[in-house]
Image (tube, rainbow, N blue to C red; front, side, top):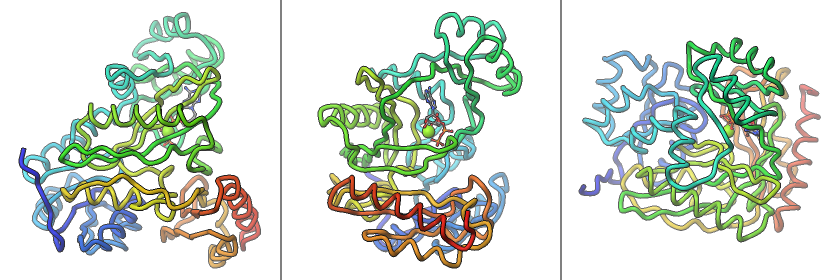
Length: 385
Ligand SMILES: Nc1ncnc2c1ncn2[C@@H]1O[C@H](COP(=O)(O)OP(=O)(O)OP(=O)(O)O)[C@@H](O)[C@H]1O
Ligand SMILES: [Mg+2]
C-alpha cells in the first residue's frame, strides 16, 4: 500500500484524554503536527492539544466531527472500542492497526500471539468454567495468578492464588464464567523488564534500550534504563520486540513487558499498543522520545534508531502523595538531572498517576540515587504523605 502521510501542519486525532495523549500532543506540536483529542473527559491531553471533543465514544455526532478534523488517528489507551476503531480505519488510517489493538485487548490473545511468533511465555490457560480451574491447577500448578483477560491495568482485576480452594474463590470473585479469565503461573522472576519498539510504514523497526521496572502495589513505581543486565540477554529482549512488531504489522510505538526468570529465560508477559509508562524516561534520556517516535510513525514519517543520551530513570508521582496539595511539587527539581512532568490532573486520588520525574545521570546507579532522592522529597511535600 502506498505510504499515507500527514504533512507538517496536518492533524492527528487522538482517542483518549490521559497523560499519554497529552505527551503525544506535546511531541507532535514540536514537529508542526496538530492534534484533536476525543474523550468524554479530555483533560489532561486536551489541555495540550489544539482541540478537544468532550463527548462519549458512542456519540455519532462526535465521531463525525472528529473525522472531519483529523487525517490520521491513534489511541492512547487500549480499552477503546475496537469496533469504533475499525469503522474509523475505513475512512481515516488508524495506527497502530486495529488488528494489533484487538490482540492486545485480551491477555489470552496476546500470549497466544507471542507463542505463535516464537516467544516464551509464563505457562497459562483460559478459565471459562470451574473445571478449567481444576485443570489449570493440575497442569500449571501453584503459586499462580488469576487475572481478568480483558480490561485490567495497574494490577487491577488480579488475584494471587496458592491453592485450588483459593483459585476457585478467585474464579468466583473475578466473575469467572461471565467474562474471560486467565490462569498464569506466578513467576519468581529475577528481573522485570520492558522494551519500547517503533515501526514505520516502510517496515523499519527500531527498539529502545531495555528498561528495568519496579512495581509497588501492582503499579509501576520506578524504571531504570538501560536495564543493568547481561548485554546478550538485553539484545535478545530487543530482538523479541522486533519479532512481535514485524509479526503484528506495527505502525507506531508499542511496549512489551517481560519477566527474566531465575534461569535467565525471557518470558513475555503482556504488550501495550502505544507509548508506555516504562518508556517515559526517553523524553529526556533518548532522542527521539517514544512520543516523538510514535507521532512520526502515525504521521507516516520515518522512525529512526534512537540514541541514548544518558543513563536514565523515571519515578511515578502518585495521587496519594498529594492529597493535601501539590503546589510545592517543583521541589523535586532540586535533584540533579531531574525533570518534572506534571499532568495537570485536578483530582488527586490514591493509585492515580498524576505526574512523573525523569532523571538523567552519568551512570544508571546514579540515576537510581536520584529516584531515591525524589521519593524522599515527595514525602516532604505539603501532604507529608
Ligand atoms: N505471572 C506472573 N508472575 C509474577 N508476577 C506477575 C505475574 N503477572 C503479573 N505479575 C506482577 O504484577 C504486575 C502487573 O501485572 P500485569 O502487567 O500483567 O498487569 P497490568 O494490570 O496490565 O499492569 P500494568 O497496567 O501496570 O502493565 C506485573 O508487572 C508483575 O510485577
Ligand atoms: Mg503490565
